[in-house]
Image (cartoon, rainbow, N blue to C red; front, side, top):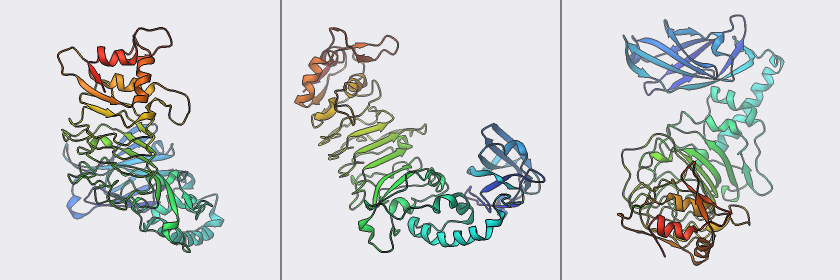
Amino acid sequence: MFNKITVSEKRGLFPEYSNLGTIGEKNATTLLFLLPETLQGYSENIVCETSQGSFIYDVLNDTFDLPSEVLTGSTLDLQLILRDSDKVIWKSIPYTFTLNPTLDDSGINVIDTAKAEQRETDRTELAGVVTELTGEDLSAAEWDELMDVTAELPVKTEQDVVDLTSYSELTNAFRQATTAPSLITGGYNLDKDESDEDILVKLPYLYTPNAKYSENTPISSAVVECGFDVSASGDTLCHYNEVSMFNRTNSSRNLRKLKLTGIECVSYGKSMFMGVPELAELELVEGDNYPESYSSGYYSQFFRNCQKLEAILGTPLDMSRGTNYSAMFYNCESLRYVRFKPGTICRDLDLSYCPALIKKYEATTDDPGTLLSIINGVREYTGAEDPITIKFSTFVKSYLSSWRCTIDEQTGLYVYSDRNSDNTMWTILTTAKGVVIS
């Protein structure tokens, strides 16, 4: 089977088929790369990443027969590289193919051949449903990936919430997108007979490493739950007008659960989640793409007026970013769970609006975990540094005076002690950490 792959100057690969067969007469699929004139004339290599390892091959005359050694898993990541002698001239963005053991190298499904005509009819009918749902005009290749999912897409539940969180196939459907998917921003109709205002949607995590979000990218008021990669967005999520894509007018007003990956790339974070009214669970996950610097006001008003926020999950907050924590947790009265990177709290921090910090997330028993994370988060103190002030609610301060802790010899961090230790949390903060508790 010839699989024609259109190559874009902008590093994209656009195959005719994203499902590849793993059986057949040659046990291979022939790839035919269609390059624009500007990319022709160079030697070509492809890199195939599989569960068994990485394989590099030469491509002659723009064609290559995939060998059986790369067709043993469920997926295949393929990247095209152009060289001038030993110098790399151009690299594509890796493209993920799905490997299907029921397809031979001619592209014929050896099990469901008799159903092929009916499947095409189903595909045509389903096209209208998914295009309305996502706002995306999906290519034939994308259809092959989503066919089984779209056949069972729900219209809505009894609670008027469309729950798509179990449809994990949607996670990678937008990995090549350079703009925010309309699943997140809206512009789709979830029910032909009712207004969008009456229906909410829960989305699975969408892997969007190439999409650039900005303060002007809205999160649809219909979205209750979503997650996406912001690593390509740099300092565009927030701006100096204290508006972000999460707190802009009429954006995110029904958002209750959010996951962001690549959060380390955001170099300006002031007021990022300020006033998101329904947000209860936030997961912030860092990668390795750290910018050279962060704005001095990075954490200023970061979670201000998130009154329903209960948990800040993911990578512990690195408080070494910026020098201003003012109003960071202002009115976060429901906050129960937050973790800080050890030794990074170096400035005054106001937690007086967070009386629930002593409570275990989604439970009723007391849990000193968050308080211990604060203690371990405070910078090391030698006596030469100026003291920092941490404000706690009256309710929390009583626990600081009663909970006892000791140092773990293996990690050097403070942990809860059920023995009669002399060190209370209050003692550690004021004596060992040089903190003024207010």
